[in-house]
Amino acid sequence: MTSDSKFLYGDITRKIWYVFRKLRNEFQTRRGLTHAEICNILRDELMRLNIPASREVPIINVREGKRISTRFADLIVDARVVVDVKINDRGITQEYYDQVHLYMEALGLPVGVILNFGCPDADLTNPEDRSKVYRRLYIPKNRPRLN
Image 1 (cartoon, rainbow, N blue to C red):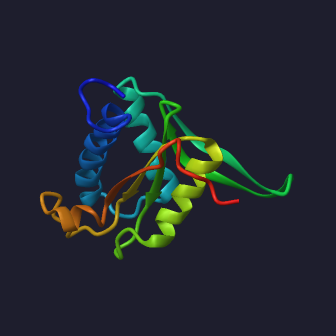
Image 2 (image 1 turned 180 degrees about the vertical axis):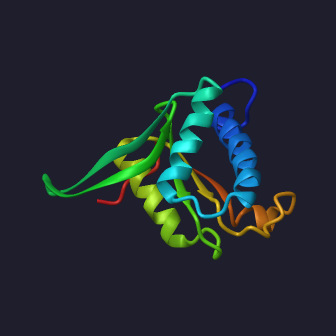
């Protein structure tokens, strides 16, 4: 944890929040971008701030020692934070939480962020509205695993 943050990797998640707000404002006037285009632009903006970010990182799901599927994380930022990008008007749902938690556990990363570029009327100064478009998740390292 850095000394300038009360959250683990808060320095990184603050920069993700900064880039999200910047891009969200830009995308209000550039509707119609695809999920992949938004993820690529997000990665490029983070890299412009000297924050390494990887796209389409494979996540192999294993059960009883056998591969059951391969998924792909939208972004892994600075090899420490999983970022999942959504575009919908419903806000951030439990399904999205569950998905990011699986990614975090599979990759062994304790911090995840969900960014929703939908909900164009969300007021980012209102905590309830902000929760429709941005969520930071944390899984403590000493949390018991369910097997």
